[in-house]
Length: 274
Image (cartoon, rainbow, N blue to C red; front, side):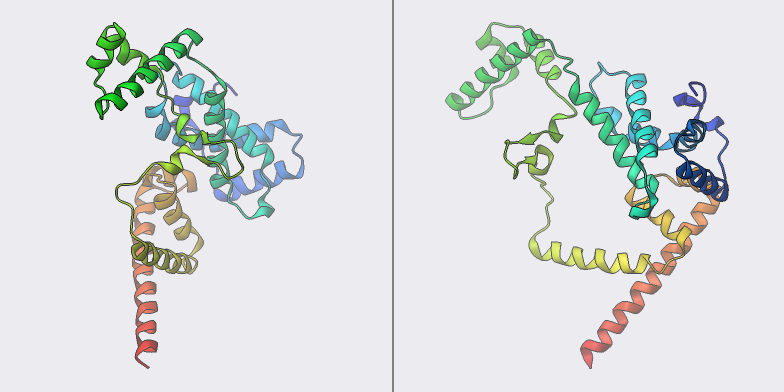
């Protein structure tokens, strides 16, 4: 398994057809004690781990190596395979992406990579910075902080950089049941006004209805491309077709959606006139 799960050996993995993958799932779901079947599923879905890591690694502290994060991702994938039950309606890929990302974040949260002495110094810097903000009426510069604390500017910057944590935006503010994650409190400068939000909601609802009228494969491509942000090449590897074929199916789906949405709007216009 170690060789098969090597992060950089993904391109050498033999992809199963949809029928073969479905048969493999059925065998495993019938008897989850067969670890060899689970391992085969892990190999087939290892690309999901690579996908998640590719989108979060830029925000990770340098203290975490790609090897560390990959092992966390694989752990999340294994957990997803072992706990997945198709009768709940969710596609495995969607379920696994959430489990992989969640496992990586949880692992990072559980490890305190900053020494206590460093944390105390960071806390002291923040306290001085807050006091200076109150007295100056603005945020203090790094140079001003360094002078106030009799420290080198570079040392201040290094300490504050260590305090940057990828998991911090997922921590909750407050301890009550109503507390929310910090990421949900960050202001969006491009936030829509209530009318724009209402229009956008109607458009999304209309699009969801239109998507259900597409053939299964075309609908899957649209979801993977626009919702999961996968590339055409990654989608092709996921559904076992060429990238050019995915491009063709994507174009077909776009045209069909345009026709469906155009027809729906025409019907509504006629009804409003009547």
